[in-house]
Image 1: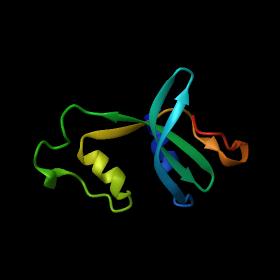
Image 2: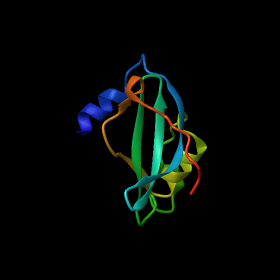
Image 3: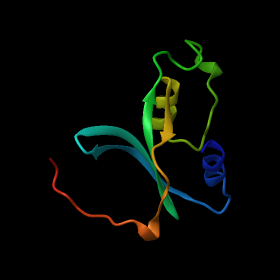
Length: 102
C-alpha cells in the first residue's frame, strides 16, 4: 500500500545503514533489485525502467535528493524507479547465510 510505505520510510527514528543493487534469485529467474537496510528492517524493491528519461533531455527538471547515493540518483535520472517487492523484513526475523556463487 502506497500510504503505509511512505509512513514506514518517513520515521525520524529510523536510520538508513546501507543501500545498493543486488541480483535476487527467485525460482527460475533473476531479479534486479535495490535493497535498503535500515537499523530495524530490510526493504527489497524491484528496479523498473521507464522507456523515456525523466524530464526529457532537460536534467535541470530532475529533483535533487542529496540523501540518495550517486548510483540511485543516476538511475532516477535515466528514468528508473523502485517499487516495494514485498513487506519489509524485520531484522530480528532475518537469517543470513553464505552461499557459493553460481
